[in-house]
Length: 245
Image (cartoon, rainbow, N blue to C red; front, side, top):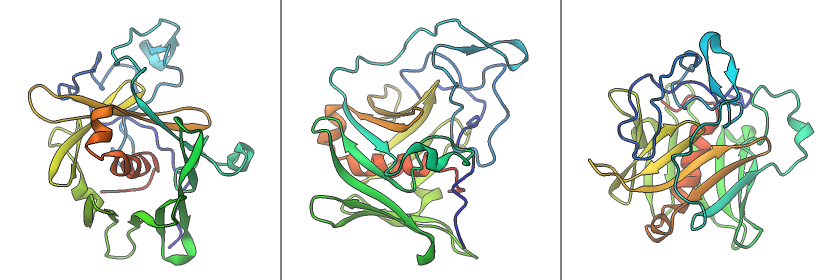
């Protein structure tokens, strides 16, 4: 069954507190935000990070104070479209199609990986290294009674996406297990932050979406923990607009 890659990936992610997010400056359930998305996968991303919602769902030009870490030491990857942006002009999810894109390493300004989805092959999305051509990650999209599954070479054994990116009981964050260690993804304004769990979480990275790219930023600690591949695959799942639960 072909995938619908035109679903709007933006929406509210629950309405509870963002207490699990050590960098959060505002709870995700603010007034004026839209109702929860169909799948409850994503936080709401404001159209402009310098605008905040006011009564009636309108936007003011009040500048939001930043609660994010200094970006000088973050390792950055860009998910970009391999085709011109006008190719997605009819898509309701404007910008890069994360199911068919390239992954650019900002340090070298070179494409390091490709992400491709072939609907004719029963709906597989393959995350592949450009350097040696090997498959690093695989998403097998659910069909019939089968649920969507994911695996990342050397990091995540094949399992259902709803188990790997499990929604918390209060629906304010998702957990992710990599090599037996658990991490959390939680919304923070225009970002989805990656942190270690526990009462004093450590910030490890974040995902954001621009007009033409998806930006994945990871701390040196996250790179040392080999979270790069799992984080990129997680970004695809969180931003693709498909039902991963």
